Length: 296
Image (cartoon, rainbow, N blue to C red; front, side, top):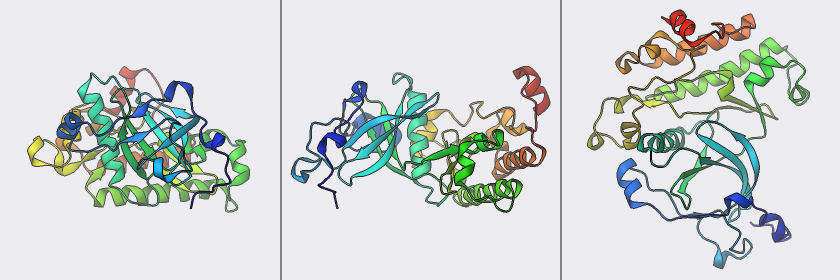
């Protein structure tokens, strides 16, 4: 139930630059990517306490949680349920069809992986400028890379590492492996596993993030009419050089999609294990040319 004692002023707090309404389904995008984004609102025009005026999905934004190359993540409230959520607003050029397809692809892949260690996606929508928005579970925590790099990080005070920090990190890796095993069982490979893409919640929850360069293996080299994963086909990810060179296996550096498989992620997990045990990355962070030489 909605807490009607909550002041509407709290729910109506928005970020000034993001008061655009989210438009209804784009027919063109539905046809191109095989997905049907919902209509929703990012404005405070509707009374969040009056279900008669509330659209199916209505969101109010408060502050930025993080930012990457492809999107900016905001904290927000889904007013119809009065719950906190995270909203990833795309930053890609909406004229670049491949980049937009990659956003749709990430949403579809993640939403179809229902596992406790994979971040849930609640909704895919468009904003007024036809940029896709993903509505996700909000996590309060830090990246695993922060805990590995900072032994005095304030987050340690909230975590149980009574068996020692090495055992703590190995337990985190075990949960990451469970998520990846689940993805592999569903014929999905991640391709960018690294501590920066793992979030640790304040109660020790573990979430594997950033499935933006993942691949649904049966859709590799497919045509649009042969698969439901239209966005993957349109994204160009099959042939793109993606991933993080300091962790990357050789088959990814070769850009031969036919060499990829579950073993690609297993290599990345092994690189993370190396970092846990040795305290350094498997490859030094040198210039890009030297890195690729090391990979090969």
